[in-house]
Amino acid sequence: MNCEMCGDFSDKLIKIRVSGAILNVCPKCAKFGDPVEEKKLNKISENITIKFPEKKINVVTYKKPFKKSVTSRKPVRKENVEELDVVEDYANLIKNKREEMQMTQDDLAKKIFERKNVLSNIERGELLPDIITARKLEKVLNIKLLEKN
Image (cartoon, rainbow, N blue to C red; front, side):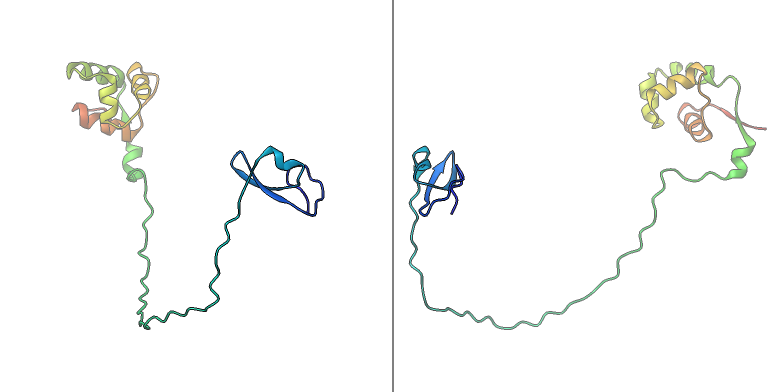
């Protein structure tokens, strides 16, 4: 058998503990660890059988419920989307009404579930809000942002 420390072949291997690990090593390498004493257990030669009363088990199978696919936003009717446009002066309307209500951009962004930088771009006029965001702004700020063509 081979020594687990040096790899040499040895007829007699000794079990030692090195840094918490137990290794089978040759007599030369045995000095690097502490010898481990093997505990000898008394084996019981009798076979023990345990009998349990038989129980009848009823197995019931259930159908898994049908999962509906979850959509992040409600679909908007296409006929309404095509007819609506955002008013030209939307940036000033939003900014003035927000300041009138003494809200910060962060507060308003949280209420309409948008990021603050998106709202600031809308207020600067750099980003045109989509129909859904415009409706959220209309509802929170109580202003009219959408008009029909």
